[in-house]
Amino acid sequence: MGKTDIRRDAIMQAIKDKGSIALTDIVQQFGVSEATARRDLEILEQEKRCIRTFGGAVLESLKVEVPFFNKMDLFTEEKKEIADKALNFIEDGDIIGLTGGTTTTFIAKKLNQFKNLTVITNAVNIAYELIGTQGLQLILTGGVIRTQTFELSGPLANATLDNLSIRKTFMGVDGISLTRGMMIYNELEAETNRRMMKQSMETFLVADHSKFSRSSLFVIGEVQETTGIISDSKITPEMKEAFRDAGVPFL
Image 1: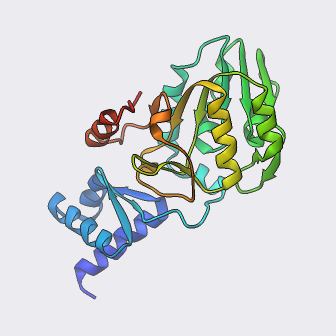
Image 2 (image 1 turned 90 degrees about the vertical axis):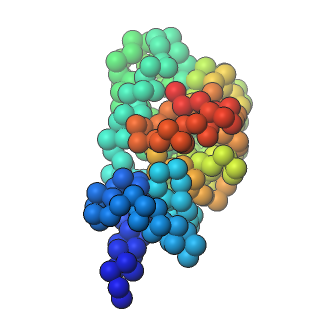
């Protein structure tokens, strides 16, 4: 096996470990030019081993659901950055919805700075995080819990949401694509997320850069249905421009 094949295998291993890789990371990690890095990703995409994105590549698809606690250890700094940005859209007196997920969990950890807030969630771990927070009214939906994500979903969860009016929902996803939409691994969770979005006046899509152009099994809806996207600083200008041209701003 030649040096080029070894490098490309190493690039693929990095993508598998984190779910994505940036072009700049390949240049720095493997000591190659940007042109060589682009060529490597082009070949790997032709071999159907990954999908090229604006400024990098992601896994070809999300075929296996990653357990919650494993995802909590991925892109933690990026998720903290997103949580800080999300706080700019929350004010005292708000009624907010939080879907399940690690990014929304990071948002929940920062809500104790508000004096008057109502939080509606279908995630048991988020409810546990917020229990006892002074000045916070917490509403947890019913439903069947999934141990991979700690989310409640199904008819009971949807019936709860049907009787609520939410001001702002912050929604996490497994994959985002302009052509495929917002995606998640589980069908019941996708339906519950759709219901929460329907009951909200505004929906903010919260996702780190690794989620873009990654596929998952079930579509929640089109990205254009949201108010906008809150992501981290590793999103490239080209990515921002593409979504903005499609009517979806990065906030």
